[in-house]
Length: 162
Image 1: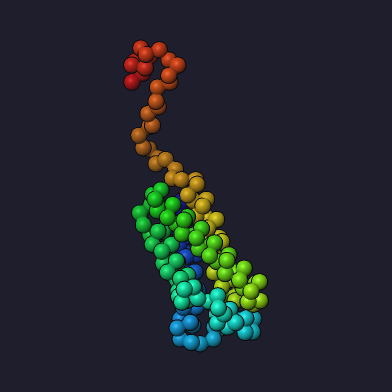
Image 2: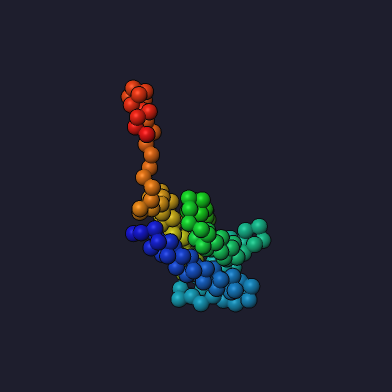
C-alpha cells in the first residue's frame, strides 16, 4: 500500500470516527437515548459513571481526539506529521481499550457505537504505526545520496573519490 493510499484510508476512517463521536456527543448534550440494536446497552454505557472523565463526557474527548488526528493527517506530509498521527492514534487506542474494559467488566454492557469507535481506532493505530515505521520512500529522480568515505581506505583514495 502506498503512502498516499495509507493517508487516504486513515483520513476516511478518521472522518467515520468523527461522525460516531459527533453523534455520541450530540446524544449526550441533547439528553436523548442513543439508537441501539442491543436494547438499553448503549443508554446504560452512556449514562454510567465512566461516561465522563473529570466532568467531561468521553464522547466529547473522543470527538476532540478525532479532530486532532484529522489535523495531523491534513498537515504537510513529513516525519513529524506521521509521528503526531501515530502518537494520537496510540493514545486514542489506549483510552478506547480502557473504556472497552470498563464496558465489559464494570458496566456489563456494550455500546455498539463505542465498540465501532474502538474498532476504528484499532485499525487507525495499526495503519499509522505502519505508516510511521516505513517512513517516506526516496523521491524518484532525486539527487543520488553521497556516501561517507570508508575509514579503511587510504587518504589519497578519499580525496580522489569526490
